[in-house]
Image (cartoon, rainbow, N blue to C red; front, top):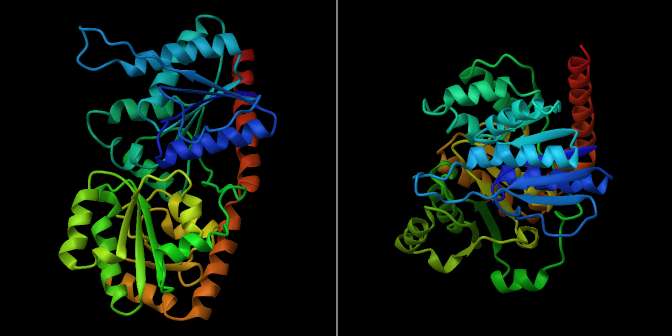
Length: 381
C-alpha cells in the first residue's frame, strides 16, 4: 500500500505514535509518506519506503494567522495525485481531519476517490474538541472520516459521550517497539545519578497542568522520608520553572534533577526503578508503557485509559487523581523491598509485551485494507 500520514511533528504522544507506526509500515514494505509542517521528531533514519513532504505556509500581510489548514489540504491533494496514494491516515482531529475531508472533496473533482482514517488521541477530543469554537467542525470531520479509531476504550466512550458521532469507532491501542524500548546496560549512568544506590524515580511529560507535576514532587517528598531516592524530571513545558521553585521551597532540590527534553528517553528509563504518572487525564498513557517496556513499574492515577494499561497490584498501582498520600504509600511498598521491586519490574515488562508493535501493526494493516475495500465498493456503485 501507499499510505499518507498526517501528524504533528512534535514529541507529543500523537506525533510519536504516528511516526513509529509509519516507520514500522515502511519496514513491512509499504510506501509511507509523512505530510506535515516539519520533519517528525522520531523520523530520524533513512528508509527506501519513507518519504517526507513539507507543508509550506507563507506569510501574507492580509492574514493575522497563517491558514495552515488550507495549506495542508492543498499539499494533501498534491501528494495524493502525484504519489498515487491508496489511503490517508490523519492523527489528531484538529485540523487534520477537516483538512483531509477538504482534500478528499477536491481530489474527487480529479476523479480520484481516496479514503481517510482519523485517529483520535486524547486532548483533540477531551479538551480542544469540546471547545464551542471547534466542536461543530470536529464533529463534522470525524463523521466524514471513512474510518475512526481511538487509542483506548475510555477515549472511545468520551468521544461518544461528548460528540454526536454517527460512524463506527474502532479501538486500536497504542504500542511499543521493543527494538528501541528495552532495558539498556547503563550502570555507569545509574551510579552517577545515585552514587549511594538510592532508588531512582522518573516522570516524563510536557509539564502541562493536566500532568499534575506538583503531585509528582509532593509524592516524591513523602517517599524520600522513607526510602533514599532520586527523582528525574524529564521533559519541558509551562510548569517546569514553578516545579523547580517548588523543589527548592520543599528543600529537596539536591535529590531532584530536571533533565529537559531527551531524545533517548529509553536510556534514562533503563536506570529507573519507578515511573510516576498522577495525571488528571490520560487517553492511554504511552509514557507509562514505554517505562514498562524498560522494566519500570508505574504509580499512576486511575484516569482515562490508564486502567486499560496499568494492572493494579501487578505492574504498578493506581490511585484516585490527587490522592498523593495513597500514591506515595504504594510507591514506598514497592521500593522498600528488593524482591518486591524486582517482581514488579518483571510484571511491568510482561504487561508491556501485550502492546508489542508486532501485535498491533497487523491490526492497522487489516483496518486500512478494509477501509480501502469499502471505498472501492462505493466508487463502483
